[in-house]
Amino acid sequence: MVELKHVGRVKANGKKCLVAYRTLPGDAYHAVIIPTENLPDSYHDALIQLVESSSAQDSYEFADVLSRSNFPDGSTMLAALHTQGRMIRVPTSDINMTPTLSESISLDELNALIAEQRGVAIDDLHIQAQSPQAEVKEIVEVKDITPPKNEEHMTTEERAAKYRSEADRLYKEAAKLRKMALELDPKEK
Image (cartoon, rainbow, N blue to C red):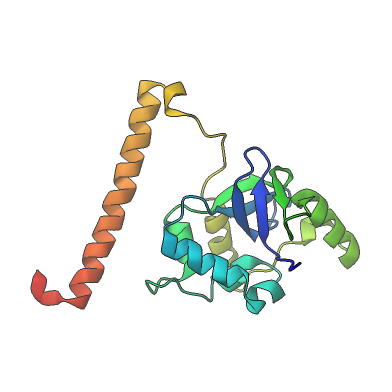
């Protein structure tokens, strides 16, 4: 059976995810994940193909490969996932790594094992950013995960805020697509 690094599940709901960063600078007990369930098909397929690649399997952190790879639309994977709010900061104890279908280990336990093997503290496991550290901090501060609320359990204000947030996200995405279309065919102004 083939083993895959960077693949896991959220313990609370069993949903699949990819782990971009197993630990964070200054916060060794949080990771950054990419939930795969609600990704557009082209993004999902490209990410799965990438995580199965030898370059991803040879990398220490999946984010390193994401920063060098592009989605079919030409956008850089790490930047696109970040700007679209698809990366989530979670406690390492909330993620089970699943290298095979029959094996799993809690991410916090895996980090402890790796730290022990390397002879370093868990706090020293994070990668040293090749780009400015502020960029890494910006990426990992995208949002904290909170248990999802069903709409029926939301207050009217929470539901309205959720709809406004989704509308804002869709507006920005539409504007970006219009700009890309204009760049391809400027005569359609």
